[in-house]
Image 1 (cartoon, rainbow, N blue to C red):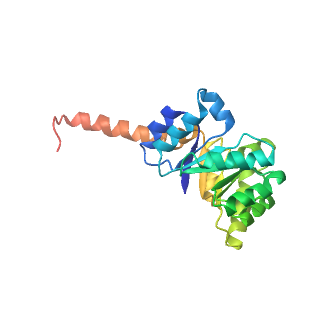
Image 2: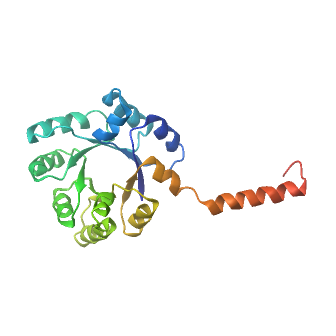
Image 3: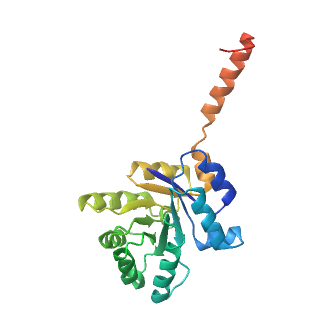
Length: 219
């Protein structure tokens, strides 16, 4: 299970990368806009913080020919960049061409098992179903994760399943149970997932009891 952070915040990426738990970063135009400044500089710094991680960077063009050209330029920025491209029919030929040219692609804005099948047949690196956005429409997003997992396994596809748009710790939990290869989430969800009130209470109790012993040095 790979854990990605869905952020472009350099300070948080530096901090949480030190846990040894972060396998990569997913960014998009909205996240880069939130941080402000030079987007290219931010991306390159993220790549340097996690040189062995997968750093997803999304195209911003819409015309297919421009998407292809920009995708090649983005991929050339760093060896650990995965180019994010929306799962739109207009881009299928472009995605196919990029895969043939060995450009790693993360197909985003995936909402169905059938879309995932098409992308797996093309051999993309990741498919990213949006769990949270489906939940917003009263559709259980993690059911889609389960269906995609079954499909990938049935046909022995090598494409990895990346559960995206994770908005709660529960969605993270269910994505793991449903067999996602990777999960990407906001910083706040990751931070919530590594904490537990009973762990905190246990530490407090052990600390209080130790102090009662009055031992000045141990061991």
